[in-house]
Image (cartoon, rainbow, N blue to C red):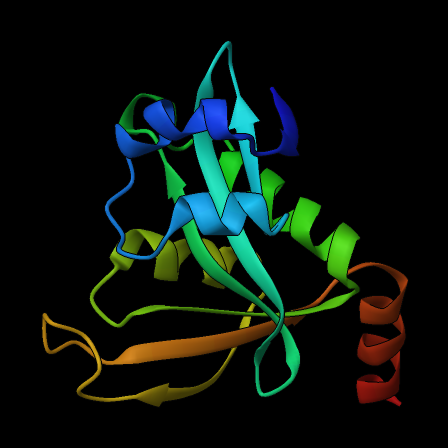
Amino acid sequence: MRVRPAGAADLTAIRGFDPFGGDRMREIAEGRCLVAEDGAAVGYVSFRADGCVGHPFVTYLAIAPSHRRRGLARLLISAVAERLGPRLFISTERGNRAMLALLSVEGWREVGEIRDVNRSGSAEVFFVKTFGARAADEATAAVV
């Protein structure tokens, strides 16, 4: 599996599994979208360098049903962290059990929620994680 910047040619594949609103074409044109490919795009992540109170933020993450539970979400998020720096924010609906489980297993820390922003009525829950050497430094400092 390979992660690379998304291109306009990936839009057809992305539309086949993308459950979100937003404008993938704009994100692609602005260089804010990566895809995981297995012959074609089977997952994508979009992001903003200053999307959550001035910090890097994963805006959308989707994996094709045929490729779920294979580590692609983790791979795509790691690729964003490599591009934008070690500290990253992400959010999901309170009812998205699969994403909540992934974030828990991967060591993301819940930092807040906003109610009444989703059509479903579910709260949007925000998380933060620090990657790489800086994460190890922060963990050591917390123990000392």
